[in-house]
Length: 229
Image (cartoon, rainbow, N blue to C red):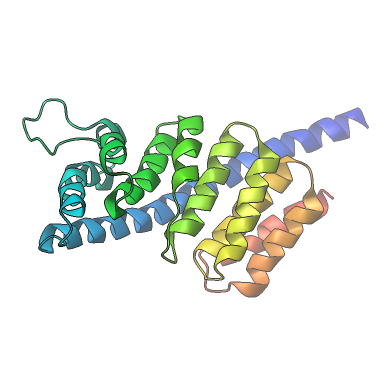
């Protein structure tokens, strides 16, 4: 009996490890979409002639270099700026938040700073800035909620992570973020040995999101979770 349980534990660890690799593969695709959106925003503010309000104009100028670093994946420089540059606007997202936090650029900087800290493995700082963000568009609030879940799960706070993932799954029923949030929740349920809940998440993806990049993989995840109930 003990050998059977030990073998089951080994299988669980192996499966979760493979699941994490699958998440990482797909998470990079989602992050790529987010960064692509940021690049479009950067281009928009670079081409557009500046808004009439002077403070917003200065904020847009101030954040430009930081968002270039962000788009290129240089998260440390995005946060703190380039100390070697003589450009007065080569400051980081944190300075932008301090100086222009109430502007549109300043609010966007909070979201981007949260992502930077998350990617740098500074999870409490990530949560600090992600909690400050209140986006009004369709995509970023959902991703922001999932990022909070990522920060929590990295710290072993699985219940808090599930709260964020389940909320994100319900925020916008689209074929990109909804199944991604459900998949993340399903993996955390597996980690918690709540395989029945994991099955619910994976089946929801299988039944409701056939166009999702996760769809083809769900039969294997469903079978695994059902076998270990």
